[in-house]
Image 1 (tube, rainbow, N blue to C red):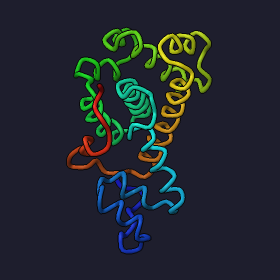
Image 2 (cartoon, rainbow, N blue to C red):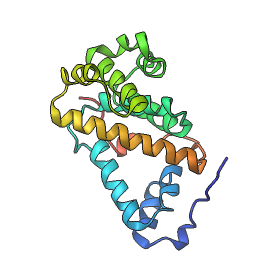
Image 3 (tube, rainbow, N blue to C red):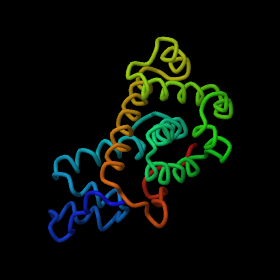
Image 4 (cartoon, rainbow, N blue to C red):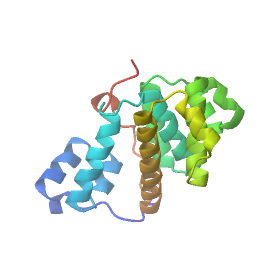
Length: 184
């Protein structure tokens, strides 16, 4: 149930209104309720992850984002990022493993399982254990571990924002081909 209303597009600054018109997904509409500097900053950070700026592999990014969504019980986040996970090449068994966690993570391969464990540890404990950090560092360099940590934190924030606002799930997922590239 919607808890915070979407802003009236007529009241938005022109630049924000154009962004909402170009991407009318409910997440964009509700984010337009933020101040323009926050809206722009959030868009830039999000784009750095999904737009190809970050070297973090898209499959590993989506494992982390989806796991955060599942752990946060964030229905909108899960709805949108299950679609993106499929787009970047994760299959239904792998998406199920992300949701289930634990022993099911074997379906994600060694790197994917390490990312899943790191995500769980970071979300649940704030400071991941040394063993969990070492596990993910076997597969990712320091830049990618840093980006992974930031994307997990960002989507913890996003999930909480979406749940706090009571955002409605869109009729269809975002057309991700306009936003990101599939796994190479």
